[in-house]
Image: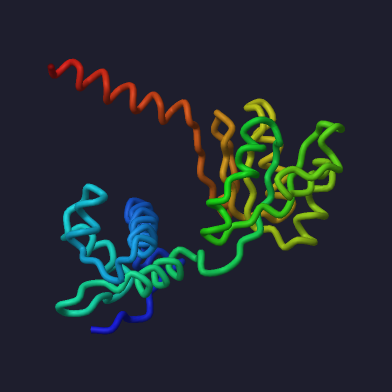
Length: 223
């Protein structure tokens, strides 16, 4: 059976896809890309599941939210499923991104090549440090924060990343919203409050380490 055109979840909530399913789609995409790089033209729900720690039934159920994929006796063609998942996730298009905060973390993120491989390009950086403003870091121009709205409009930016100290994060988020940015990834270690129409994700690396510490401590207690 040839893959069907991927379905999108309705904006009105009908057919809404659970967030956990969307998270797993990104994992499937990465694994499929690895398989294709390694020379595998096809895969199966069982193979994908084993590599990622899910059952084959879970993989099939997740993909079924978006249509029918795969071929009898063949499984999934990696290139076709990659393209289908990228279409579902919206990463089959170019996404210009603004980075606010060019400290150690911001610099590291500017140099991360994985963003461009998935369709994201940081097209402008912003900071309040006069020594950084007007420079180019990792090929990205750095502007004064006061120029945010103008640059976002000129470069058609819809997504922003926040890598500023916690006390400044909410103010920066408000500035991004005022500049018509509708998607934000917040790396500052605090929760920001945003309007309902703005999608956002918080990434606190210390919390991730705390989760690992909890798991390690509890495994030690089982011994």
